[in-house]
Image (cartoon, rainbow, N blue to C red):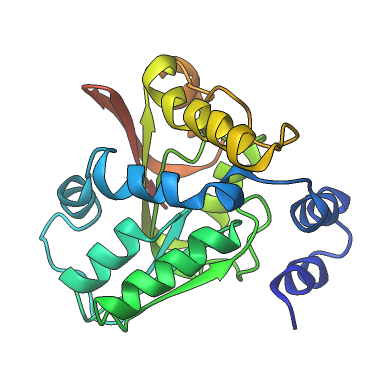
Length: 240
């Protein structure tokens, strides 16, 4: 059964979820499909590597429990999914993204590096096809720059985490730097593919710190910590 059908079946009375799934499957062209290689290059070589920050935040003792389940939203080419799975072979990582091209890149890289404890699935981050309390840890980087509904995304994060589960979110703070990859992708897509109807914005959405923090205060998290370092802002939330 396709993942979109699973999500729709799980919540058949939620018209918003049905609409979101239909939008994902029937949408017009995507920059992350047309010029997937450029975003993959940026994620692998240009964007900040927060792997050590993630580990210190979600596993303060530096040792995840055996068989801990981790999910990365908007995984792109699977950068963090692969690095965490490599570092901790006792955990299982699921990377999810809406882009087939990005997921092909993620699977290729994982296979090339012989990483066997992570998988990649095509899903809508606003209607995750997973049961409540499915994961111990959730991570996401730069996901709010392109998602249309930040509030719903955080509600889904809260839902799929287990009690005492933690989520780590990293977001850029400055619109200019955050928009450079999207703007470049738009320009290349127009030159290479003569397209101008892509669903992603030309400029990234960047949240002010107070708006970023407010997103995580609407669900009953046990603790919420928000801070900034350089060009990025972070949130670490623990579910009660």
